Amino acid sequence: MKNLLTLIFCLLVWTGFSQTKSSQRNPSLMEGTALQVGMSDARLQRIDAMCEAHIKEGKLPGIVALVAKNGRIIYHKAFGMADSPAGKPMTTDAIFRIASQSKAITSTAVMMLWEEGKFRLDDPISKYIPAFKNPKVLQSFQYRDTSYRAKPAKREITIRHLLTHTSGIGYGVIDGDERFRMIYKKAGITDLFTTEDISIEESVKKLAELPLHHDPGDGYVYSEGLDVLGYFIEVISGMSFSDFLQERLFKPLGMNDTHFYLPSEQANRLVKVQQKEEEKWVHYPVTFYDTDYPIKGAKRFYSGGAGLSSTAKDYATFLQMYLNGGELNGIRFLSRTTIETMMQNQVKDFWEGSGKHYGLAFGVVNEEGVAQGGLGSLGTFDWGGYFNTQYFADPKEKVIGILMKQTQGPVDDQTGWMFRMLVGQAIDN
Image (tube, rainbow, N blue to C red; front, side):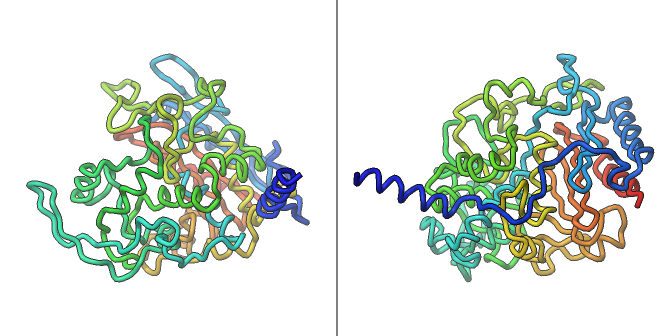
């Protein structure tokens, strides 16, 4: 009887802090037509011409493009090849490594736990991961032996700093500062994704020992802060980060093709990462990472900043939840008021002149960006990924645009800005 009561209590606690029903009920994304939602089918076909030209001219091997408006998918097409050397055509249900598009998902998970009163955004991360206590800032560096001196930081790293890339933490092998690339390599930091047998906890605790670019809050440096928050979610929730996302976000949203590591039955839908070599598309080789990480290796490194793979439709579903004010299909994931906070400028003037500011999960178009043209309405939010994927969602027009590709190395790819502009010009109401 005692064990039964304990089980019932645990279930009640979990239910109290899991998804809740909403008085709103926006259905999952459905198929629709351009005419139904006030868009021009003839103008949407300009996207066909753009994608087909990039494929024909050898600028890209393959593309999946999706446009949704008012909760209806009105354009979802595949072009070119998912695997050029193998002659495998691209399909609309192809799975892509979304890399930094993982960041918004991790941020969403953080904010879901914040809504439960688990922490405050300006809490020091060391309160939950003690290894980050007393951070230090790089002061001097010796290239000959990679030794360095560091001074105590003026303040602790907070959860808000980690969400906004203002913590001072760097990004290892892709860091813009060579000193940090060398420091992270010497320390054995695992960047981005891996097939190796290491957990995010192990990597994050090593990261905590390293110096910062700047005092927390005093600058913007793209960072592994979302990896730190992936481990933070494990600490707060008592679940693996992968399980948390599956149970609290992906399954309730119906994002059945989104994973850190793909189930075997989905592996054949993973698009190959390709590069241009002597005017031919070839598989990208193993470098500091193996591009087959989603389907091989130890499969235990849950990178909150870069580790997920997904489809265009799954990611559009995630964005639709945001356009609905945090709800989908009668389930409340975030409050509308929380999303309003998330979209505010959280990085002072660090992005000044870009036409955007950075919130707690996305880049957000400001008045300057609207004036530039082609970025969407005020408040349009967006981001992209390391393997050449892009997305945006316009809350005023209720429009989502997803563009999925898988390339590395130099390519003459103009589809990102062209797609966004072409979606905007197709609005016909």
